[in-house]
Image (cartoon, rainbow, N blue to C red; front, top):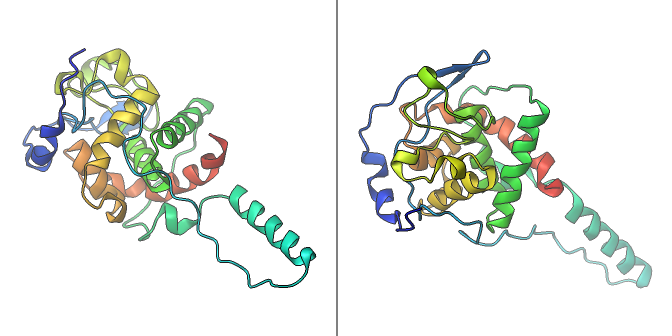
Length: 234
């Protein structure tokens, strides 16, 4: 595997003019072709830290200055908060845009959500990064770890994020490994200025360079719900 860095790809990401094929039909679902630009990261993606560590949830201190019973109660409240789901403002800080879509998930698709969330946490990135990653995969593959689809395939796009070996994302074996594919996507995302404050569809497009840049927006609400459920269970 060529381990040379691909960071030079990112500045040209939005200028890429590669024309991609239309949506792919698989089991009644339409899949838009995968990432056509090379990654803005090393081709040998690793699950090590690629961004800022996950921020701890901020909890307002209670103004308890009473007896030990009050302090014990406050400690219990804090423990309960830490075990709760991520707050909506961490998952979707600026709300969703446009009409939203939803699909029911199979056990395999749900496992892939957890794999994406687990890889995001291992990479040291936060809940917002996981929402962007899950939303991107919902659009690209409907959270299915796709192999080559023959005539229905968009070039050589494969895996959860429809990444292309020919564009430097990694080997077929690598990009069809959920942890590797997620980490490669996140490394590209981490190099996008202000990605946390961008709409999901804009952040995803800067990494994926899809022929349908607005298509990612429709999955933000479901992605946020899926990450909220999986974040403390992955």
